[in-house]
Image (cartoon, rainbow, N blue to C red):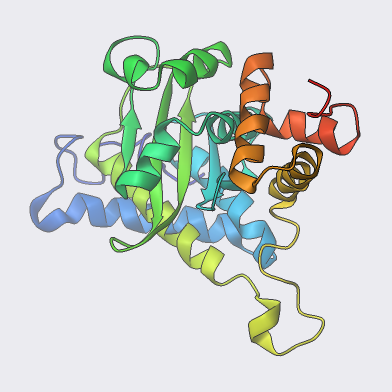
Length: 263
């Protein structure tokens, strides 16, 4: 069994679990161990499977219970993969509200560590998200940007069922996983760039839920005669008012169970 940084906080030489050794040696050791777990986790995976595998790797390496990955997009983030249904739902809640650690990390381009959603500063910073997250059994969320210092393209979101933070070494490992995630997403095939007519379009099959939301937005636009932003706002407001996610409402719109021109 691979040794996880959370299981062996002292590294091979012992010492302060929160401090890197001389020359950053402990961090280097954590990086080597994490790289080994990442390599095993993605071995044999098709390109489209890698984001999901890396979410599972994050849960294996870190003291978290779930992970999801989303890309920045106009309107709502594009949720690509998650390690569990609970993690997927937490990502959908943030997308529905347009608020939460993920949204803050996208805006800031830096990690956002919400260490206790049950009380204090974090609960007050995102009050509605905090209430819904804790109702779903999540007490802490860590959002790590994907991309570079110049451009944040998405986030790796980590969920935990007890309050608490990440040590510097655990954050180092989380950022390492996020870096590999970024490379994996950029390596997904793009049909319009490969020259092959049968090449799979970029993100094909990964963003199907995002497509459902925007199909519903298009139907709401037609029903109300409004633009995209207004239609998306109406979809989000309806989801919030009914205590559901935007995806849940979108599926009702597509199935003609919900019309907005009859309100």
